Length: 510
Image: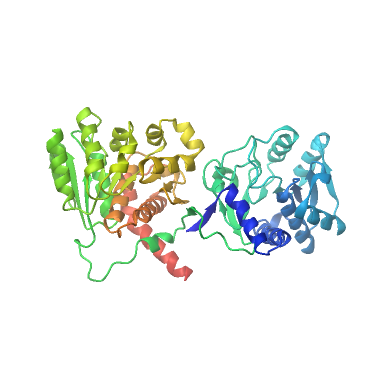
């Protein structure tokens, strides 16, 4: 896992280093030199006429260092500062003066000069974007917005310093306008905004640049890496057996709605559960019996009290479970899922109908007798939080953290760049594919996470959720032929291959 920081944490990295005795000029030098290395590696065929565009702040200072290091390598870039150069201060001022002292003409671009800027950009081979960095926290307007729009309209590839100008470092939102990057060289630590949409769409390939100080070890948020799966899912002992691999109960399915239960069960089996029992309501058990081979079934009575009692007895013999897929949304089903969500004594993944049943008062989960992992999609998260899907998507980190705080449980906010949140920690999964956007893949995910919970040590619920999300996302990548046309069961079948791929990556890295 890599540290993932927001706006304030990014500032704190620099402040802590400077307080420790590392001059700000050294940090800027390291950032600019490292960014130049990335620029020259990624745009080796586009260095004939670079255009370096800097703002009035410290992000502009990074740009002037890049221009100087390009000069050392024999590349004389066109350099422009957007705004009044007299307002450039601090370390950025030192590097702007140094660049000019070496004979580089840094032109000032005012509102009346935007057509000239546009013509420079149109002739450029690559644009180095040092206009706005992580400190941007308001909508860009005026002639600066016009300048960014003109630069973007040229369609000349852009290389962003720290993050593309116009992106919110905290959320990934576009603050009015944005200059999309083909490559982003981000400094010291990954930024939250680069790993949520629409930030992902505008950042291009993100490359982490070392600036000579360690990334924060106490960052609340982390970015998962593919070989983390190998670490989170250790190899089994040679004498492992089905009993030691964990028994998962899938409290899912009702008459006419058995597919979700089956997919959850397949996900659990493929993720390593030694035994899986599909505990379905009413006549759904008979329907499932005709469909399963490796999975077992049991019947949960449809009557409320009898159903709750049967489910709780089932929990006495299981290690973890899934509650919700296909259970139903009638009054009895809602009462059943709510009771089991609170009273079950094993860790449970709460999905689908269970989340709908709890939407009226998700705080009841603070009374749950064992850990819970909620797996809402944005619409479900919105109902649980009493807001809208659009508001959830506009601030996904906040939504996941708020729901984790409100329920006291681990939350998996599904979607592109799935977020895993608890009251203490947060992680983002960078893996996945649009092909996962099909019915049933969420049911598979709930089963995969349950299997991870069944074999996890006590207290490792967050890590189990991370392992499940990462295994599911990587499996989707392996199973997908294109960006669509994927069956959910194919994702389940690819989970063991995802684990094998992660272990191979981990082995090669060592």
